[in-house]
Length: 247
Image 1 (tube, rainbow, N blue to C red):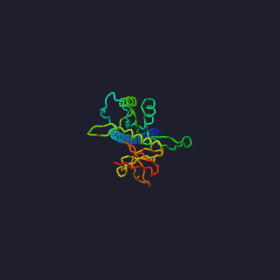
Image 2: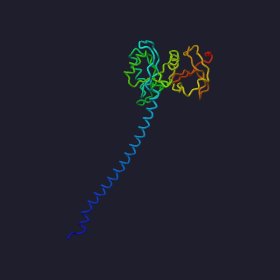
Image 3: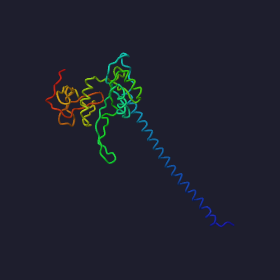
Image 4: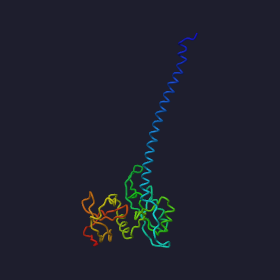
């Protein structure tokens, strides 16, 4: 006849195994629940990224071909976007061609291996201006698949933005003399119409034309040169050097 105590001892390992299985199952359920939450979060981020891509696509959507002649050799400044902030990478490649590129940059102080170093970075993410013929800029764009034309919508069509030579020269003159992020502004946030259009005489900005406006948070007015997607201000100049341009 079986001893009850012996039977109970034989059952103990089985009960212990069952309890272990229950704990593992409970742990698996918690891990599964955590994975489901992460998956839901990833879906939300994916949806958000898709929305951002759609918004960007409206800005850098493929433009309708311009109406220049196929054999046109005129050099023009094209406003472009190098996605994922690769404007300086694009500029380095364009330097190996017959075209010209300009990327407005600023200097940042960063700590590298325990030492402070000054690093140049784009002042406006993705923004690059390319000076080339239409055929040449298209060849560059075919080579750099991340490079896109910036466009304005006119009459329901996307029209590539071309910056006039004088306006671009003024922008480069001012941007080339500053490395401060404080000099750059979002053009859409500026009320340029409230200021006089002026021309600077003498100094580093001789001949530069822009708008003489009061900037928010600044004590005095500045001369601002504005381009599509970027505006740069002269941080120092003598007001007596300004000439008001009559309309």
